[in-house]
Amino acid sequence: MTMFDIHTHILHGIDDGASDLEQMLLMARDAASQHITGVIATPHHADGHHWNPGERIRRLTDEANAALRAANIPLTIYPGQEVRIYNRLLEDLEEKIVLTLNDSRYLLLELPHSHIPRETADMIYELQLMGIVPIIAHPERNLEIARDPRRLLELVQTGALAQVTSHSIIGHSGKKVKQIAMDLCKHRLIHLMASDAHNRSLRNFNLDTACEAIVDTLGQDFRDYYTANASSVMNDQPIEVWPADARMRKKFFFFGR
Ligand code: FE
Image (cartoon, rainbow, N blue to C red; front, top):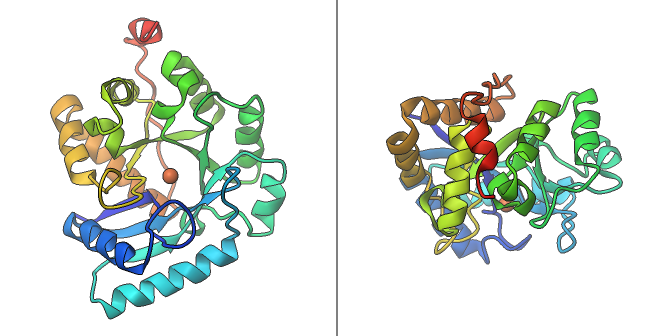
């Protein structure tokens, strides 16, 4: 089966991901060994620490792919970005400073850990007017969503998709985050799973292990849905948004209180 990973920090020398060329190649080998054939590089942008315009990401992606070919590693890296909401986001998207995932309609949006910025819903709406579908990265790590998953439901109802991180699913971010991640998945508030891989130790790919955990806990349908949607992002195809689980809503809404 072809596997795609739509959220990685595999490019080196650009953010807090791979530290150098050697680490990038080792990460690439790890990905290939898990039957991942393509990954989208999503360096941080406009998060207060990193400023990575699209042009730079495209250049580094080309260089990385040349290095992968030279090393005979069967993996292709595609350009993308993990973007925080900021003032000029929409203008910078038009000017190609902000990149979507592999030039598709999908944009990977990162929330701060502590809260959901007030302008988030408006931004999701504005992006859709431009034909862009925002994907909220790792909502399970946002404290406001952890406290009240209805906040994610609202964003999904506004038109965003949500991507859970494989580490959260297998418990590498702690028991509580794992519980929240699984609960969001179970209630069909999650549409994609990706690694958010940063390095080879604590934040590795782990997509295969996470897929097994999803199948064990929630069933094959969930895994198939996430896998198919990652392909849709890669190929710029529409994603069918499954309805959030209404039967469990009450219990779900009381979760964590
Ligand atoms: Fe990330």
